[in-house]
Image 1: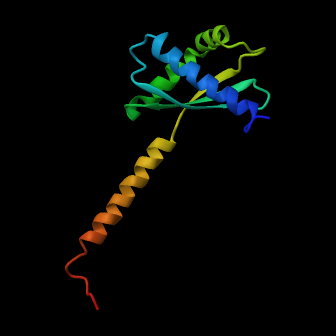
Image 2 (image 1 turned 45 degrees about the vertical axis):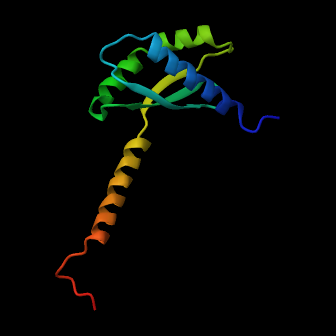
Image 3 (image 1 turned 180 degrees about the vertical axis):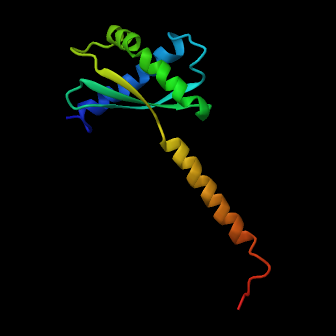
Length: 125
């Protein structure tokens, strides 16, 4: 018995393969630097959501549109690499967790600097 679901194992495999396809097969100047951060596959293995991070967050929507337009090509290459009855339909999404983490880090740094430099006009009594 495997310690986690088949859809999660397939998702890990799809994430690795799509990362390789984007890096080695797709040569498009509009993509920029893309990292595949995750893949969530439905339990029936028919649909997969691929999560990406982009080096320049401002270019994220352009990159997302380009990859979604290339999803049929990526799915075809994925089908050649994987021995599956059905290759899942692909939907690309930007992984917001990285931006969220950076925002939290910034807020924590602000709190830390406020605590290390209290205002002079505050009463300490």
